[in-house]
Picture 1 (tube, rainbow, N blue to C red):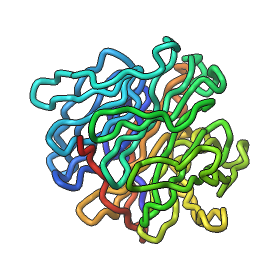
Picture 2 (cartoon, rainbow, N blue to C red):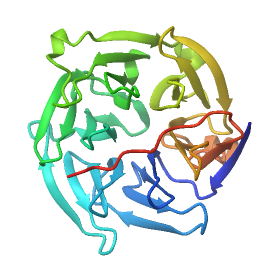
Picture 3 (cartoon, one colour):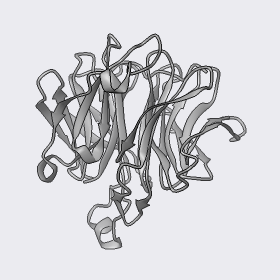
Picture 4 (tube, rainbow, N blue to C red):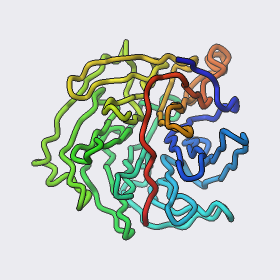
Length: 304
């Protein structure tokens, strides 16, 4: 297994990596830098789009461009013009809320969660239970899955689409929900069999952030504060492998590359003092992991 820097241009808070298998490119965001990046590992060319607010997540749109969860809006991003077109606004009664991580399910619906007011000097210090998890359906309608979320983060689904895994980071665990694929709902929240499938020890493991799934059904989770990505068996909650990075605050991960056997991992330097940045100069970089012996599945585009 080999870890290296993919792009040696540190951002403030890189998040939400998404491999577009159609174009062989990687999309990711700089949450606090208010940017969307679109990068080709073959040509090394990177397009950057400035967003007028914090941006939590991005996925490509099947009809072209991308859809972003930025501020408290779902919006379409035109790659040709850089224009952002608002689709829907959430949490209108909570002006200090903002979107965080997001991902599409197999039907092409875009799921993303919000968080409350954040202490920018300490990104994990925020207003508790102020966030919610939302779904932007392909028809452009937004539904709320549930609320009282502390720090909405990683999402992924099992290969048979019967289970959704979800991270509310300050619970230091991953939860599973029974997922109804045809409707894109969690049945009824109180009846959807929400259960904890893995738990973490904060001082040792770090805080769970973004995640992805491999073809064997194992979950890979970026652990903020521990500089690692853990591979976990969700059927037992057992930690199988740890991949270490020269950046303590790893934020998210996805599989990419022509064979979907390269893992791209984002990180952050948000909240660091100049001295801490000097001690951890690669924090905020995008990393890649090769020779893993694991593969992922293609990321899903938004189909609206």
